[in-house]
Amino acid sequence: MAVALPIEVGDSPRPGCNENGVVAVYKYGFGHSAAYCSCGWTGRRRHLKAAAEQDAWAHSMREKCTISVPLVISTHRIA
Ligand SMILES: [Zn+2]
View 1 (cartoon, helix red, strand yellow):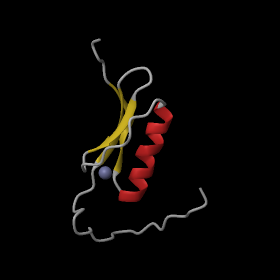
View 2 (cartoon, rainbow, N blue to C red):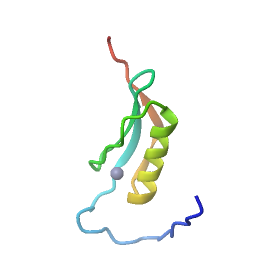
View 3 (cartoon, rainbow, N blue to C red):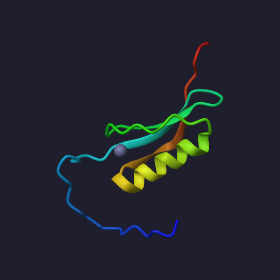
View 4 (tube, rainbow, N blue to C red):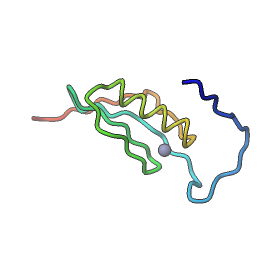
């Protein structure tokens, strides 16, 4: 992680990405977490919640989407 991302203040919206989304990690239970963003991006299904969180952070930095607070949202699945 030696890459420094330039932080631009007030940069103009890019075509095709006119609105930044909100990215969150959804925890579906043991061994299944995935990041989703309201901009349409979907992260890979992860066995580790931390891996899904990293997906969310990486997407947030790349696409300038907002990290959800709280980041991890637990969903209850009825088996
Ligand atoms: Zn996004």
